[in-house]
View 1: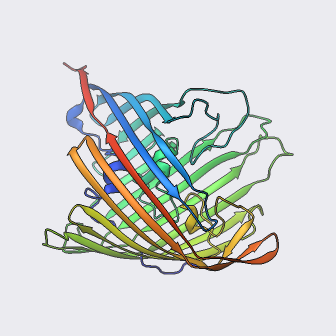
View 2: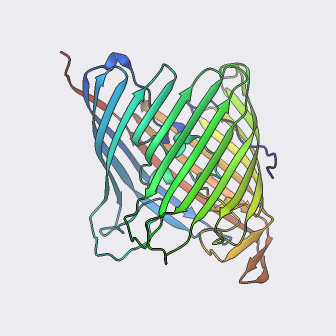
Length: 401
């Protein structure tokens, strides 16, 4: 079952705080044929989460990630990029050796390092004017344009780059992003499971985004598969989960300088456990009501979420019937009210300051814990962060000249 919701629309994505801080320009310009460049991608952050209500524990993320790469465009429609991704939390000298998404859990295999570091390699093929194929380190995170129940935007700070294959299409009336993110590779006899995520995000548009009233119809799907055929047969069994969302949105572009745009969107969210019985709930749905406006230089958003057994794969844990604080507690028919405000200032397109703050009110609800019914008291959670993004490119040489 997919229930209809009201969710926030994509308001002029080039002006939004999240877009400026977390999204990447993936166009391949044929005029840059032969360019060898040094690219510096970096995000410094300090985010504090004061979480209550049992969905997630509170914590603070102080640190930065740095991604220096060399890129070469040997042909007009082919771009190669290679480098390293470094993640540093201030005050941490030893890091777990594992795939990072949220705050990593320790795996005591003797690996210790001053920073978390992984290689980055990307091949971009601009097949046509509107269609692109990406291999290696794909354009992930907020670039997929998923709603919060499907993707926790805090992963833009803490998660490893997504790696696999990606298909991108962008036209006047249709945007499309399909990808495979391979998160855990296994060798024969491994105790762990092969893990990958298949995603699909489409945005059919009734008219141009610049129209006074712009209408669009987002469709979003995530599949998470845990399994494998060559791992230890006595290990964990196969599990497949699905999250999906679909609906319609309206964006209003005004001629007012103080409130240049506002939006409302209607969507439905669905969860299903397609294979395996590791989670106690097999399916559920959610209802998200979200309105957004650009007021002066502020992005203001008000949201309402209703959850009936919806379990999120990669979303904010507050939107899930099972949070990250206690995996044995199931929140039944819970709902929340959420308010967010963001501010961004671009010193230039390559240097951007961002500030965000948010509050979540969760009314009391019923919960099921170890087979017993319990009551969860109302709670209010807060979060706030400050960010600085740097993304300059430096031309080293043109190999064609």
